[in-house]
Amino acid sequence: MHLVMRSARSVVSPRLGCSIVTLATVLLLWYAVTGLTGMVSAARLPSPLDVWQALVQVTVEGYADGRLDQHIVQSVKLVLYGFLTATVSGVPLGLWMGQSRRAQAFLNPIFIMLRPIPPLAWIPLAIVWLGLGDAAKVMVIWFAAFVPSVINSFAGVRNLDPSLIEAAEMLGLRRSQFVREVMIPGALPMIFTGLRLSLQASWTTLVAGELIGAVRGLGHLLTQGSLDIFPAMIVVAMLTVALCGWLMTVLLGLIERRSMPWRPSR
Amino acid sequence: MKLPMKLHHIARSEMDPVSIVRQTDAAHAAHRRRLARKSASEARGGVTRRSTLWALSAAGLITFFGIWWLAAAAQLIPAMFLPTPLAVAQRFVDLLTHPFVGFTLEQHLWSSLQRYLMGVLLAMAVGVPLGLMMGWFRWLDYIVSPLFETLRFIAPIAWVPFAALWFGTSVGGPVLIIFAGAFPPCVVNAYRGAKQVDERLLEAARMLGLSNRMIVCEVLLPGALPAVVAGLRVAAGLGWMSLVGAELIVASSGIGYMMVKGQAAVDTATVMSAMIAIGMVGAVIDLLLGRTEAFAMRHRRRARQ
Image (tube, rainbow over all chains, first blue to last red; front, side):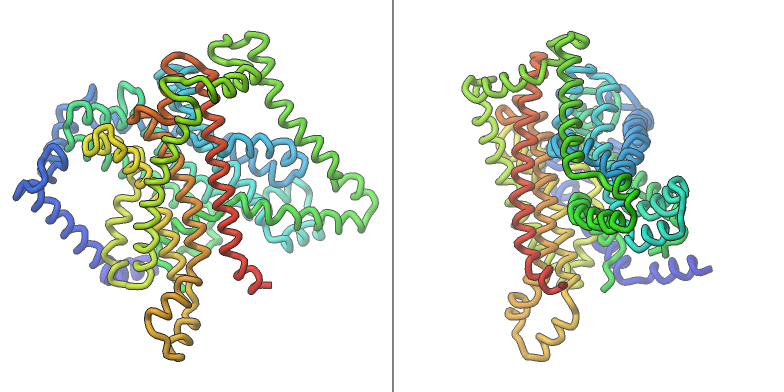
């Protein structure tokens, strides 16, 4: 009931109305300068109609060795492999570093050393080691997603309210209880922040990896579109990447809200 | 103060975890020491002495390089794919004087830095004023936010085909991609900074009859400064990463181009040297902006104490 009321109020909010009007205006303007008057040549910026046709073409007939759904499945699969392995390996490592000074002392220097190297810089090395296949991309995505998930879980444990830790100590919680009841719930907000950053990094890395070499996937669609000088297809690929990234972020937000029911929903 | 949901969402995601760790390091050590004073057994078990921690840090690094060196020296992985750390260091020094694909390492770095500065400075020059104005004028916020939110989800690297299409191989291509990477954090943080300015201060300034120009210079800008500088730091990092990505794909010089050529020649030592150089420059940029951030925050911290 509460939810329904909230959404009903937001429908009439001036912000949303303004958003719709702005986006519609921009679409019209875009159409006016490209398709209608041809002020900007179609080789530089495609008109919305071209983009629609390219979208139909890639969904029905396929383009760059596959239909749109095949490209999407390929890309989402790689992102999920890399992201999930990074989460499973990174979050526990970060939690461990957060609660043990010794683990921190042992592992942190290595992180400090490797962290400034941007994930995209690992792509050539991954290609040398693993070739142009899926394995190289998963490795780079894993690395890109690994660092934020470790560092944010680490900071999440460190950011725990000291009075909570003291209370837990006073109440004589066992180690396992402390981890389960205090540490993980307390660190969850930061962990999810880290996961969101990881997810963004995963998508960026995926696109870069697929641009450099792939036989299928959204990045390959981009490359093929740019090789054929087919700007409408480039726009379709860009929008699809953005949409997929956005959907996965929304999904992660839903999981975040589900796993922290005690936090007031925004 | 309530930020609109979406921008608030990003703003929260850019809390710097490293600074949290650094700030809590000392507090946690003190806490442990205080506990330890209470019981002798905990003094032995709970607190690790500083020398032990240093030894562990050294051990961590030695383990890392040791595994690398062992795997390379014992030829578990062919030297072509995994050179020893020493070989990489030698190659790094070698590249400083001997050109690879036309330029030495520092010449590649210099041409990368030029592009980087152009892209990042452009992003800052456009993004920060835009963000501040979005925070100040509601109508601009309503107009720009939906567009910004739509475009923000396009990964900076995805602009590569258009960069090639619009600018060919000229300097404009990489600059566009760096701009695409560095622009969003500039806007978001300047916006957040402008929104965070204390309402009471604004009211007081208006009551005291300050002109609009004075309010902007004396209240709005100083109030927004810390958030703006924090945004610049994030932008600088993302811009550097976008530069590397852009140069891997569209460039004929620069550190990323050097990596691609090293990769094509299966010259792993060169690729690793370039990675080290990228990491070092990235770290220096982050350090400089971290100092600037601390400088911009100095009043705030004093006020809070």
